[in-house]
Image (cartoon, rainbow, N blue to C red; front, side, top):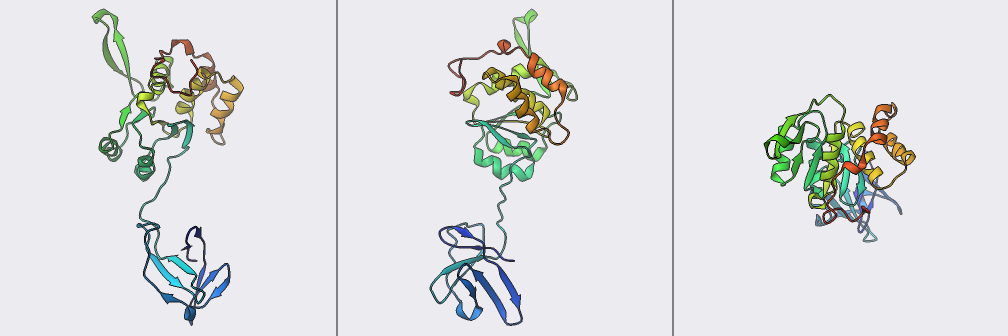
Length: 251
């Protein structure tokens, strides 16, 4: 089967190969190869696709895709918009880079329990995307040393605690970091925890928060400990700068 592109909309036209040549099927019927003449190829639709342009006797222009596009737009696992310019997903890979580039990301809140690979780090550096490693490294202030910020390693196999959730939310609630992506390994539990606490800050009831969390957890369902953590999280502990808060947050 071959796919064709027809101006101005994309349509599917099937081709079958027989002993006498190629026949193209359109909405108006079967067009034999004897009624087709090759014309100049118009690549304005997509320069990444090679088109075979033909005209039938009624001057109906058809374009048959002779090879797939070289640019693949594939979103990360469990990708979903949360709010305007705020997204969630699983851990991105190299095949998702073209998709992420379309988002014009400024910040990624990395909640995964492992560091991104070198290719993804180079992609972020090339596109000026700042990665906040909240799930691996946490920051605390040393009160005995003039409140100097220090960094401590977080056990990546532990579940998120209140301090890491608080840190992630304070990054998310600063519109200077947008567009922003929050991600973890599969985009389920860690990301679901942070987004669930964000929903509580937005005033959602617990039933709606749990329903959204479970929507991304798959057939195994949610974890009761995650839902308890979302429920018990102290939303008043999050420091929010009203001048930098996103427009969709009522404070």
